[in-house]
Amino acid sequence: MNEMINARILALRDDMRQAGVDAVIIPQTDPHQSEYLADHWQLRRWLSGFTGSAGDLVVTQTQAWLWADSRYWLQAARQLADTPVSVMEEGKENVPDISSKLKESLQPGATVGLDGMLFTAQKVKELQDILAEKQITLRADYDPANRIWAERPALPQAEVFIHDTKYSGENALQKIERIMAAVNGKGADAIFVSDLAEIAWTLNVRAADVECNPVVTSFLYLGPDTRILFVDSAKILPVVKARLAEAGVTTMGYDEVVPVLQSIAPDVKVLVDSARTSYALLMALGEKVMTASSPIPMFKAVKNDVQLGGVRDAMVRDGAAMVHSLMEIEQTVSAGKPLTEIGVAAIVDGNRRKDPLFFDLSFDTIAGFGSHGAIVHYTANEESDADVHTGSLLLIDSGANYLDGTTDITRTISLGAPTNAQRKDFTLVMKGHIAIATAIFPAGTRGAQLDVLARINLWKEGLSYLHGTGHGVGHFLNVHEGPQSIRLNDTLAPLTPGMITSNEPGLYREGEYGIRCENLVLTVDAFTNDFGHFLKFETLTWCPFDLSLFDTSLMTDEEIAWVNDYHRKVCEHLLPVLDAEAQQWLIEKTAPLTR
Image (cartoon, rainbow, N blue to C red):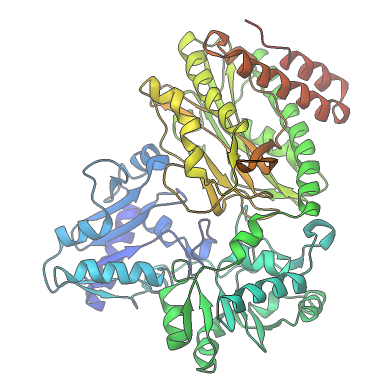
């Protein structure tokens, strides 16, 4: 038994008893409903030892469970093996959701506690209704963190800086005017924003508050007469305050948000997205709330010409960094020199950090060799760090935040001669990747309507993958953004010209290897005819795929031609920025595929 984790769970149970709480839900989020969290809000990780970026913890007086989605089933099983926490493999048949498990485990009259700052109003209402069916009470004011976490990290203190319009293409005042026109068009007078990426985009502000996500810990209120950024004043330098003032934005303390929301005049209608705003903040607004979807996610997702120019430039530099990395990895292994997964990540990260516009990684580099490649969001640590050598596949998923754009790329390479099974699996994945890359579709099409293109060849073989095929990508912002995606479950957001989305089908054989092939693609206009306006994707990422892994007997002539054309364009973009050794390596790695 992991005594440290056990002691933390016991301390939580003692606090629950004193508060009259029979069960508690600890989510992996913060008051901004973020996917990636500052250390201050990593209570679930601290309590359980599970480090995945998603998954909620539930603790009763006798049991504890952690719900993990398919990306983290293997990781959760490994990290929670010697703790009092059991893994609930979310998405599997017969695995109950949290509310069902609570109803099953608790008696009528029991009380479930949670922190209303960490749950959306929509989720709290849903839980209240379901638990009430068994006369179980839900309390939304239970926050044990400060009482049981003696060494809890402080709120982030990184200084805020302005993201220059030479990169953003639009100043904050212009963005606010667009936002308020849309808000007024919905019949509201004001908007309250919790999402950190939306605030960063709106005000052209950035910081290093969250690892790999250049956001500012803050809230934003845009009203008819008042515009307030709620943020720690120590983080705001005079030059930043002056730039905010140009957009009519003043600052107040981060912890002043609730009393200010409560004090807003009762006749002001404040637009709030109840699915993305915490219950406690919605309650602070009271009758002033007008629930509706925010216009900001769509504005943010559709990049302007300046942003797209920056992304295209960043992709060339990023591709060059990847070529140097893949070459070094291959040479190291071929020479029989020692190399581990952590070493692979160090090579990839180190080459990116040489870029003068580099700010941070866009996520922790995933380098999974052999069976570790089958763990979708695997991150090597000192205990798991595997030797990288000939004889299996190496999956590298990585990216960076540059001042002019955000990148995200996955390559799967063979170290040594691949097996026929590996080549078949890789080719089936690439057939799906090519199908997305070459798709032409009518305007208004959503990602869920295209997702089958990436999976159909795998399905025909009785194979599949459980993650989405594509996610939206920010501009010098979060690597995961909405509203669009390409996945089986529909997000109802149409793929719109200017959106950047990943194209990353995969296949994972537990205990053997994993395969994922990812480029970023831009939605662009294709043509208009009598049947309507059609769109397509422009590939933005430039880096070769491993030629040794293709089985051309499984490919159509058109698919082979796509690979060859892509590799021709890789050379066009990257050869001018590579040194002589890397140029020769790239030329060899992009030789035409033939039957």
